[in-house]
Each structure stands twice: as C-alpha cells, then as structure tokens.
Amino acid sequence: MSQDLYDILGVSRDADADAIKKAYRRLARQHHPDVNPDPASKEKFGEVSRAYEVLSDPQKRAAYDRGGDPFGGAAGGGFGQGAGFSFTDIMDAFFGGGAAAQGRGPRSRVRRGQDALIRVDVDLAEAAFGVARELKVDTAVVCSTCSGSGASPGSEPVPCETCRGVGEVAHVQRSFLGEVRTLRPCAACRGFGSIIPDPCRECSGDGRVRSRRTLTVKIPAGVDNGTRVQLTEQGEVGPGGGPAGDLYVEVNVVAHETFTRRGDDLHCTVTVPMTAAALGTTLTLPTLEADVATGEDPELVTSFELEIEPGTQSGSERVLRGRGVPGLRGGRGDLVVHVVVETPGRLDARQEELLRELAAIRQEEQPTGQVRAAQKSVFGRLRDAFNQQH
Image (cartoon, rainbow, N blue to C red; front, side, top):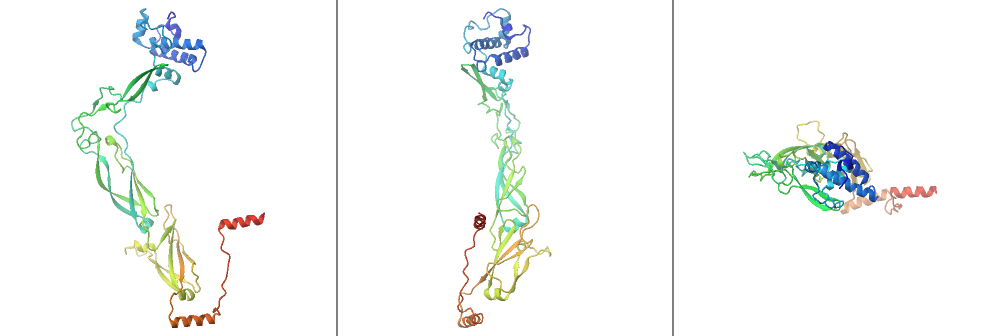
C-alpha cells in the first residue's frame, strides 16, 4: 500500500483513537458495497478498512509510524483476505458502535421467582359474603443456610477464569466480510461471570429450598367461579434468593343445594300443590344468609315470607330485590323464585269424585284446550318485523 494510511482516513498523524474511529465510520457508510455498488467505491472501502485495522491497533500503528509493514507481507490480499478487521467494526460504523462489541456482560444470579397458582373450594355463601381461609402452600423459600447466596458459609463465588468475569466469550469465524466475532454466554460459568467453588449443601447452590408454609387469604365478597385473588410476593422465591413472585388463589364455587347463581342474581325453585296455587298461600323460605348465620348478628335476615297469590300459574316468577349476591364493585343482585305447580299423579276415589264435581261446576268436563303457535325467539320476531317493513 503506497498511499499514506492517515491520508486514506483523512486524519492527522497525531489523531487520537476517537477521531480515527469517527473518520472510519463516515467513510465506511459512504463506500460500503451494500450502499454504493460502484467498483471504485468497493476498492475504496477495502482501503479504508485496512487503514482502520492498522491505525485502530496501537501496536500496528506504532510499527507503521516507524516505517514497518503492519500487514506482514499480506497487504496484497483484497477485502476479506488478509484484512483483520472484524464484522463488529462494520456494524459499529453503521449503527453507532459499542453495543455489539461490549456485549451484555455477566447475568445476575439473583432473579425474580415465578408466580404460583393454587385452587380453593368455597361454598356459595362464602363466595357471596367473603371468607378468610388458611392455606398450606408448598413453594420455594430463601435458603436459611446460605441466605440465598448459594455458597457454603464462609465461602463466596470467585471470578470465572474462562471469561475473566464478563460472563461471555468471543467466537471468531471468517466470512467474506472478514472476521465475524460473536459473543456467547460462557459455558464454564453459564454466563454468571463467577463460579461457586463450594456450593451450599442445603440448596445445592441455588439459594432456595422447598418448604411448606401456612398463610391466610381473604376472599372478598362477590367472587365468582374462576375468580383469582392475587397475593403479592407470596409465590416462588427466585434463584439466588431473588424477590418472590405472586401467588394467585383461584376460587372454585361448590354447587349449592337450593340456590343457583347467574351473575349477581340467585335463582331457586319452589314447588306448590295445585290447591295451594289455586287458593293462595304463604311460604317461609330460607335466604343465602342462613348458611353463614351464627346468631351473633340479630339483624341478619335468614328467611323471608313468599306470598303465593290465588291463581298462581306454574312457571311464574317472584323477584325479591337486593337478596342476591353482593357485587365486587358494590350493589347486590336479586333473588328470583320460580314457582312450579304440582299436579297430583294419583287420586283416591273421594279425591277423584271431588275433582270431577269441581270440573262440572267449572264446566270443564270436556275442555277444548287453547292451541297457540310456538313462541318465536327474539331473532325470529326481529326477522318478521323486518319482512313486514319491506
């Protein structure tokens, strides 16, 4: 190479390393073959790269300044042949440099633990009005022997000799662009940058052990099946004694004998005899509060009077406002009572005689019946209304 390397980069002979790198970045972006396919630019890019290889290396630069051959007779090779600049230098020129060459550094042994999930069965009343439960949880906790460090008492981790504590090692591979250098986690220390020569026998160097503990969870009023209650930092302790994750308690509501929940409303069915439906009656029915009543709260309503009016038909409903399930955001649903009228299946002679007499009085010995079209769905009624308009 006959041209002066400093002139190729356009810097003075006393330029510092930053000025040389800045000049190389500018020229590399200008003459890189992917940016400028002109053959002259490609040749210029090779010259710039070789000049930067020498002037960015203090030893090669000193040899060049003394008049020596920094390439050791291999200067005749083209771009990528004999040129010892790395692919990271090219990436440095285009993207501002530093990130690829510096790597990520050693990763910490201390990491956040995983979240944990536990399912708990509760009664409908407990889900409606809330309950506190004691749970036994088997999770990872900080090792009491090493306090999470992973090293036996009296010892400590030492820097990794393979990666010299940086947690990464460089792998060099030659390509048409020159030497491609990539950084990979050190296999000796698994990227931690240090090795524990004497691991704790209790936790085998992990800094945590499995343990069963008891905690209290407060399930708020109004939860439904599948609701999850979050307990912050009550989950798994992380490796190296890291902060614990969260514990999620998933609620499973057990089916109730009397009530069925639909949203915040409660539904139940009451069956009354045909005579009671015809003549009317009053029934005493329990509320959901009866399941949690202890006698300590005299104002707790554990039952209510349901009026069955004369002539009540099977399938009718009675709605009691505010007797349903409390909502998580306030308010309370309703209690819907579905009435089913029971027709007697077997009659003795006297009962049959009385019913036939009643039928004669009501002129119902030979009823014709009322035939009606099947009730259409909401979408069917909307379709008919649309067709009538068109």
